[in-house]
Length: 328
Image (cartoon, rainbow, N blue to C red; front, top):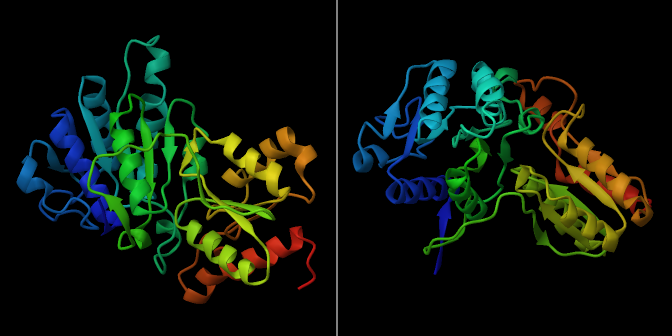
């Protein structure tokens, strides 16, 4: 039976269920225990699991990430929460040079089953140092998986799969989505890593997005529907591995592709998708692939500049009309 719960509750349920199932799973990060989490994702977990499994850390991302990576290499399954992925840049050495490479460097003898999670990208007026979207950064690294879910159902099912995975997993959430509600089954379920989801079927154009930009993609599809344009909307859910075939099969049907992402344009996820689809699906395209990204600049604090920098419904609709060769 499904009930409507918030994104943060879905994440909490996933962690609670996996920690009850496997005593090797633990949670650590800044304010995750006594304060119940900076965004209340871990509310009540300290009371149930105690301070040895829900661990408040110093304000030292490199330090506690190193501890967690070492724990993962010795049989535990840590979940590391970052207050924002911008702060995780301080821990990049452990993620890049240890967690992602250990299986290869040990000849398959030593893995690193660990989940790094927390809010990613912009969250309104937080300024440039708290507003970067990092999916393409981490998706560039072999040896890790990158997940970026858009809704409570996907968040819970994918987080459970991430915790059980034997590879390091980057799990990117959104601060502005923690309160979003959606239907989540009471019974246990898992969502396979690496499988995109068609959130809205359509015939005229394919719109691909992920994380909170799915709100823009679906909003644009709703507006286009009013004008007789049937858009198929695909939620990537997982950035690495990327589900190329779901996108390609959609493009075979619609013959047009628009990609919406929050990241900067240079070397973004949309650039990789565009290259791969034109390489493998060029003959199916009736129009150039187009994309909408954030402005190629740090995100400013002023609300009008935030709005100008990020993708929105109006600009997405305009771009779709261009690939549909509509004049309006």
